[in-house]
Length: 152
Image (tube, rainbow, N blue to C red):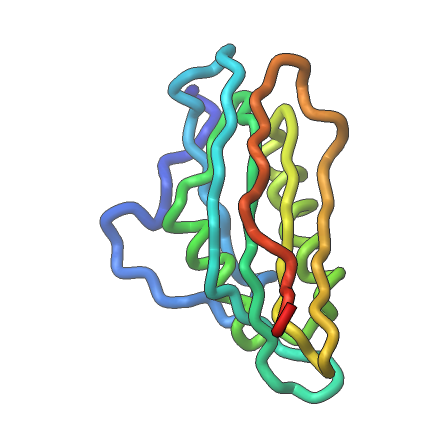
């Protein structure tokens, strides 16, 4: 695809961006454009900061998407997610914001994100967002992350 720039981070020493706004996501041409398939990224050690206390919050993120013309380059996604380590945000805003940014920039056929946040103040928070109805015929497996059960 001639209008898609070459990835900036492949093969380069790339420092962690200081904020999600400064993080650049790279996209490469979909090698299977026209095929209906699902890509899954799991980030089991995602971290951001509580906007009230400034203390770290931890989540297991699962991002599923059906690519169209581009796919997200995994190193740039890793750096983008890592940029949240010093970012204050409520669980809902962080989870939905990640999904919306990916959809806005990558323009996949479909995307969903599950944010399985570990308890804060004794309450686990799970946040789910998707860009719309999954395309007909797309196999969408369960995200495989159990809700927090504590002693349950």
